[in-house]
Amino acid sequence: MSTAILTGPPVPGSPLEGDLRSLGFEVRTAADPRETAALLAAVPAGERVAVVDPRFVGHRHALRLALTDPRFAAGAAPGALTARPEARPSLARALAALPAGAPGPDGRPATLPDALAAALEADGVAVHRPDFGSLVAAVPVGPQTRKETRDAVAAVDEEAVRLRSAVKSRDGFFTTFFISPYSRHIARWCAHRGLTPNQVTTASLVTALAAAGCAATGTRGGFVAAGLLLLVSFVLDCTDGQLARYSLQYSTLGAWLDATFDRAKEYAYYAGLALGAARGGDDVWALALGAMVLQTCRHVVDFSFNEANHDAVGNTSPTAALSDRLDGVGWTVWARRMIVLPIGERWAMIAVLTAVATPRVVFYALLAGCAFAACYTTAGRVLRSLTRRASRTDRAARALADLADSGALAEAAAKALSPAARPLGGRTPYALAGAAVLLAAACTAPLGGPLVVLAAVLYAVASGAAVARPLKGALDWLVPPVLRAAEYATVLVLAARAGAPGVLPAAFGLVAAVAYHHYDTVYRIRGNAGAPPARLVRALGGHEGRTLLVAVLAALLATGGGDGFALALAALAGAVALVGLAESIRFWVSSGAPAVHDEGEPA
Image (cartoon, rainbow, N blue to C red):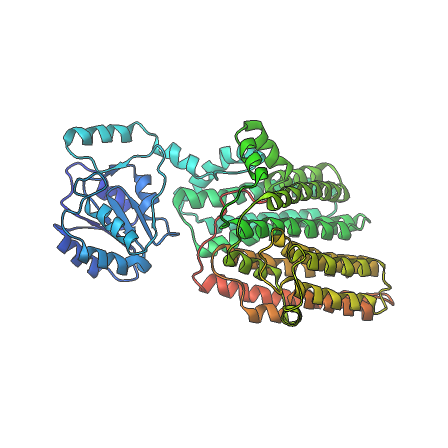
């Protein structure tokens, strides 16, 4: 239970107390600041507390936005302030030190909540002040002003505003025009029945797994059902975030589930399509694995570029300026969002093609669309990086180094080569050279010989050289995606060349397990929770250690039927999944890491 303290006697006829109780607050009334301090001290330290001026007039949802959002330590609206347990000590100090009648911004005595909010900010506490838009939140002075404010409240349809704000501010064309117009109402229905976003997220996962199961039947009826269920899963995927925004039910666990289940759903569906195709005599596992590799590398490009530039200063790129101008023209905004094949457009395409075509056609279309989108977005970001003048921060360089996922071999190489590995226009050329040597050997060298293993050793050395110095070059954000592409593509090529039954499905499982670890790394960094512990990265071998191990396994087991290679890859996939998932669950469930909620549709 949370506690709201009114800083004076309630105004007759005001719905404020009822609104606060409906938001989960126990309401208490103080006569003066001294009694407010006493009531504050009586509230258990682990509970949220709010201080509200009794003259407050506004929409209930304005209070909800200001006082109940769990993502922020403190929040404020005119005449209302809230503090979570971590901000309570600062609030107590501010209340004890605040002089009576402290002036507000307009020179008049500030309300006690407003004065406390200013004192919290002066004490270094970030106070969240939500954008209310057309919602009303005010402390009117005098009967006439109070009547006018009440009239302004009555003139705004609060529920319509709340429904609109439940939808992401930036979504793709398909999601905006074909899903959100009704999924927001499903979110409201769920909220009124006490369902949580995590429950809806889980329902979306179960539905997608059912879709994958239908696709795995290999029948036309199964494919049609799979396409329909995949669309239903996407509707639920939109609904969970809208429910979280509608009712402000954000949580650390929910952020983790939302971030990881999307990839689990999509990649499980790829596997279902491959199984269904195999039932019909068509082996498309290489295409399924290629689609997963391409899609994951696209995401790594997005994450790496954004982490490298989110806190950069002095961006003067003309490419960025052109992009901003294009965003001012309506049709170009939607066209540019569609051609990058975001999740809504991508899942719609997959669902329709599953129902009317074959898994092979689905993967051909997916590979072609994702390849074009990857070239388009990467080329634009390269141009931005080459034409901008900005300084990259130490935090950004650290994030890129963490995204590189370097293990013990690369770290040893980095330490040895640090004095000698000079920048070649940045660190990316080292990563590109190592990846090129590795992939060339994987594609052409005999599987039973030592050349692939030697190339993997050289790749480990080159990847160490790539991270030997801070990644602050203009194009150094390309290092993590290049390393991801090298590792994943090597597994794909070696498995495809082995040719034995079961090798490609095992390789699919291995890349899926490793990709999960990399997504987990991304969302920890985005949540300012730091990278996974070094012990986990070392236990999983780092990207270069896993690549070298796969090369050794291919040299020893890929010839002579390849069954041993399939078993080895499957065992490695299981080990990576077990270790990585166990640590990830432990972290997200118990660490109290901040929630991460993406307000733009991911690619």
